[in-house]
Image (cartoon, rainbow, N blue to C red; front, side):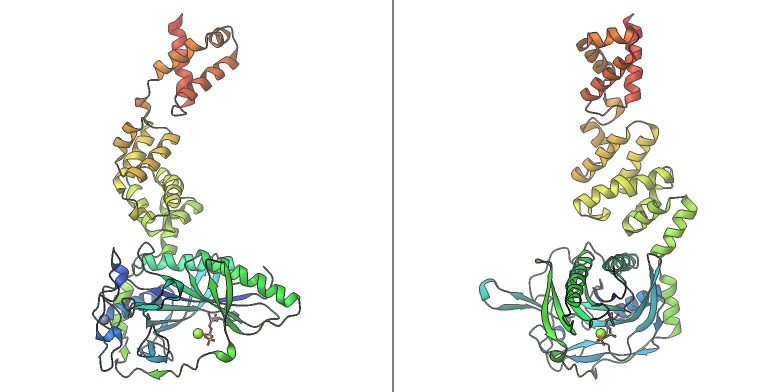
Length: 468
Ligand code: ADP
Ligand code: MG
Ligand code: ZN
């Protein structure tokens, strides 16, 4: 990447509280199945006039957790504001958000050895969801989403490449999962607006980027588009663009001059939130061990290689699994298998460990077999794959798919191969070392690679002795 590239992110996270931010309606992100449209609503989240919203304390607690995890300064007193917002997904015509004094500001997070400054963290409500009917047949509104608590986390323009921005989002997502306030496997969404500027051009805001992968794609697209304009001498003017994930492109949404006048005013229906020291101290005590701390401990206490530790802590599920298993089999074996084959299999299915439907004890059981030498490396890998597919304990999987060493009738296979390859047997007996390799290869083929080459070799030599 060229010098003079600056990127800043504004990320909205749907929090997993039980109820919505300003009313008692259930928060849909916690539901296994999607609720019928407009069933999780009340007068407040429908935005009826005269209703009295109240602030859900759990949202404030979660915001403080994030603020503490990012070393932010927390406001002693904070409040909500109304932001003028004229669009059919918000029928009271304002969004309740925070403006002048957000709950927290001035934090930082380390990403890939670089310090990224956090400008502010604030709370706000999600608008309703618009569903555009195909063929221009109208637009439907689902108010289930209205009032889902959002946390907006804004960075300073400290990223110097799209890859940096992606790494940050991954780290942020991971941290939120450790804090237990966001679950990437649920329907909760993490959406970002990215600001990007190159030297010689104005700053462009790209809206509507969901998840971690698209951040990199959208920013790379913008980088190429803007740098080609600058090279051609075309002015890059301040504008807001929309990311289109299907096309993989951004398109013009509005220019600076069309930017809405938000006319923020104090929200009179909600009381000011006082955040005292006892409250902050209480939340600080409840903070779990965070990814960076866990990484350091895994490297120090379990002597895990940095790469392995990094891979394991990148998912809170895997970190818990490792911790559980490392006390039962050797940490080295637990580490390499979790970071390697298990993670590979889960990634292939695009799932987290908690979604795989397998028990921690099953992995322990399999690794014990491996440690005892009852199963080969290769077959243990196969067993993990079958386990994820069939959701059965290792003993059953190994038996069913004949993966254990005990399941193989090595003597029988060797006898069969020797009978079919008489010449090779004779040649080996006559001192032709190559022929032994050949016989071992034939046996490997017979066992479809399930047996250990060394074991086969021993079995052949044994069989030859008996032959005499
Ligand atoms: P605004 O008031 O226009 O919303 P902010 O100062 O709140 O501007 O910044 C919004 C986002 O834009 C932040 O994430 C910030 O890091 C980013 N940003 C600010 N200046 C630049 C720049 N020159 N290039 C890229 N991003 C920027
Ligand atoms: Mg802003
Ligand atoms: Zn409601």
